[in-house]
Length: 159
Image (cartoon, rainbow, N blue to C red; front, side, top):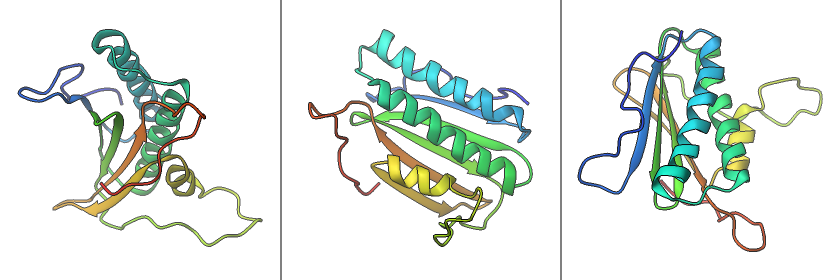
């Protein structure tokens, strides 16, 4: 249900990347745990490592983590792994699950209730990637840690 593995709060040896990882059993309570891990991680990055993290970045990271972990819990049996990494002024959110089926954005339908998580993730991320793994898949989104002076976020980039 909760955190079962990871390198929480450790700086990767030999690099300037800061990262945290956690594995969850896939129950619905892990969604809140994952959001809590993300906000705690970004607060630590800001307080301990002195990296700027805007309120928007904090909120968008929490939202993306929630959407990706929710989808993993809803559509894939078994465990879920969450990795958060600071790379080049952004947080890289990566969620692995056991289902090999790649997600896609549902066709526009104003009457549709739900199934908007991927649309939301794409709208708030600077980069997005989904790929099959030897078992399951990994979905990754990148969110800028700071806003430009006009309050805008950087454009979409490749991973």
